[in-house]
Image (cartoon, rainbow, N blue to C red; front, side):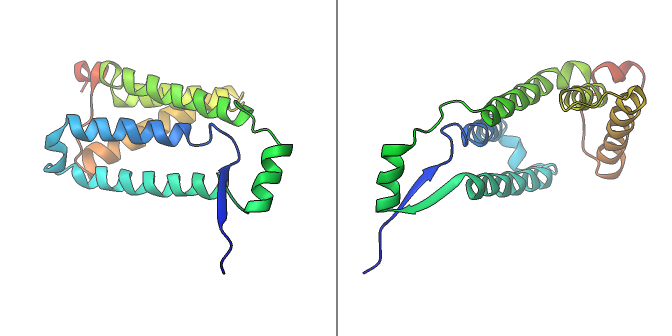
Length: 164
C-alpha cells in the first residue's frame, strides 16, 4: 500500500507574489478582449508561458512533501513564520512593479523603464554612479528600439511623444 503524502509550504507568504501576478494578468486579459485577437497576443502568450514557468519554480522551491508522521511531527515542533524577510523583499519588489505599471502610460515606456531599473539597482545595493546612469538608460533605450522598430509593438510614449 502506498503511503499518503502531505504537502506544506516553507512559508505562508511564499505564493503571495505569484498569486497577485496571476490575478493582475487575468484582470488585464479580461479587461482587454482585443488582446486575444491582436498581433501583440504573441507577446502575451510568451509572458503567460514565462509566468507559468516562474510559478512552477516558486512551487518547486517552496513546496515540501512529507509523510504523515513527518507532517504531524512538524506541526507539533515547528511553527511556520507568518512574515519572513524573503516575503518582505518580494512584497517590496511587487510594489515597485505596481508603481512601474502605474507610471508607464503617463511617463512613457523608456523613462518609466529607466526609472524602474534605477530603483531596482539602488534597492539591490549598486552604488557606482556611472553604472547607475549608463545601465538604466542603455537598457531602456535598447528595449524601446527592439519593441518599437524590430517587433513593431506599440509602446506608450508619454513624455516622448513631444520629442519623437
